Image (tube, rainbow, N blue to C red; front, side):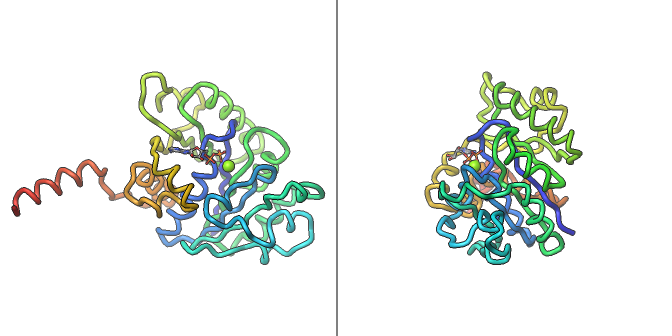
Amino acid sequence: MTRTIAIISGKGGVGKTTLTSNLASALTLLGEDVVAIDANLTTPNLGLHVGMHFAPITLHDVLKGESKLKDAIYPHPFGFKVVPASMSVDDLTGIDPSRLYEVVLNLTGKTNFILMDSAAGLGREAVSALQATDEVLVITNPNLPSVADALKTVRLAERLDKKVIGIVANRVRKKEYELTKAEIEEMTSYPVIAQIPEDSNVTKAIFAKMPVVNYSPNSPASIEFKRLAHFLTGRPFLEKPRFHFTIIDRLVNWMIR
Ligand code: ADP
Ligand code: MG
């Protein structure tokens, strides 16, 4: 069975591409086949996040009807597959975003997961990704403007009869001036299924053009991305928080000294 999940948000810059690349890799680490599509056609950057930004044939060529989908699917060294989008402004003319639906249809049955990194907001691009998907993950930062905009995307997804799996809160610092998990759940009426902490390793990993789950597997953000991948596949997550490891490690070191 193929699950198609679009990663959507109301605001830009909240972490959609980071979530897409890390879920792709974390699900792959669990043995799942994953295709990650850069469905953010006007400002694509999935390729940049995973070091695949020089692809000769892109999703744009497919949406223009000039190339076959199979020629725009690239294997990533970490095991998942990527359908990158073109970084060139010239490629924005002549594309038909509504053909994204055909792209998804074409991949259905050939992989376990199709993840779509979508455009922010409620424009034509975002709607095309929503129309092409069955399920959505809504990502937001824990502040009022971000959640208010996320709420609009949630309502749009509902109108299009899409299954909202839940809300991912990203860049969580647990400060008193942030919205809490309970407040986000009350505003959106959906469960917050992951709280990804603010973690400088995420920025370092993007600089290194790789998912943080590979760049720094035990970093706080990586652990939460892996927890989310387990949740999506219904697997129990056995990894203990690093804190416990540190205490136990220290104890063992102390005993064998
Ligand atoms: P979007 O795709 O929604 O526009 P990105 O995934 O590109 O957002 O993230 C925007 C920027 O936010 C990234 O370049 C990264 O530096 C930063 N970022 C995202 N998630 C985190 C995090 N959990 N901790 C620290 N920085 C983050
Ligand atoms: Mg992005």
